[in-house]
Image (cartoon, helix red, strand yellow):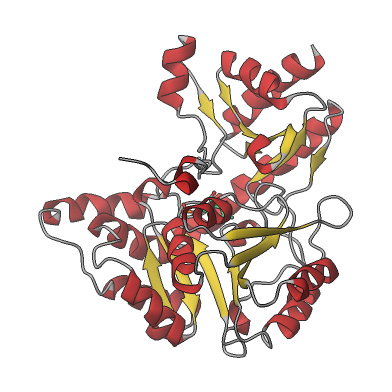
Length: 367
Ligand SMILES: Cc1ncc(COP(=O)(O)O)c(C=O)c1O
């Protein structure tokens, strides 16, 4: 059986290194993983309670209509049920959007150093990627984006914007979001996807979600994940918010049981728990401020972040630093596959984890 060339040439998505694997390989008892921007508090007490109660029903298939989730979503996002659907993580929704809107040799466009899932999915669908260079090294460039789009208008079917962006932690400010949408809402044949996985972590005064523009922007999709602030990455739940025809198209593509029963129950509990959201924001922001202070003290360059992670410049081959940190029980995230061989991404963890990461970084980079 010959595997098609385009599959053989795919670079698979490389997730963060698991804790157990690191323990086995390095003979370590204690390992801290700050590699996948997970919520260090774990699932909230309300979610745990809801999950315990739901276990007894797990011999039954999940609700294919996602009824309870949709009801909770209408309150949480102030949208109608026709504007919401859910996926097995936002990963699955990204995958389906590419499959719905792109054919072989079509293109998707996104800024350089964006979330890797866009290009992995494109590769699997024989869709080409257009990467737009950034401004001032790390920032979204509207003019260059429009220029790149104009060059290949007929072929580009989706524009992905992660806002805030992973792995840089930078964001598109409100004024730029408005100008971006003013231009792209007129491009009726292109889908605009704002991936707001880190929305709840933003502190910048001039950050703004794109959700409010759904009524005025027919071709807009906003993605939200339950893997970060809500702390249920393991259950796999993501949401798409869009105008009804796009939601309907997605619902035709998704499998009826794509969101497990436990994920549905946990998602409902998550959206009812504002206290937990605030608690996670607090530990994230104090963790980030601690990182900024310590990285400055150690003279390690970093990019200020609107996410729950920070990208640091190791000024040397980051894979070597990564390895030395593993030996010390700290898993960070190499981003060479994003085109950044001298950087590592470091998630905010619990205080003890953040301190251990800084201590290990100081040993490795500053001797
Ligand atoms: C920008 C961005 N979008 C989406 C995701 C994936 O989220 P999910 O776990 O819902 O698939 C991530 C995860 O790291 C991310 O950084």
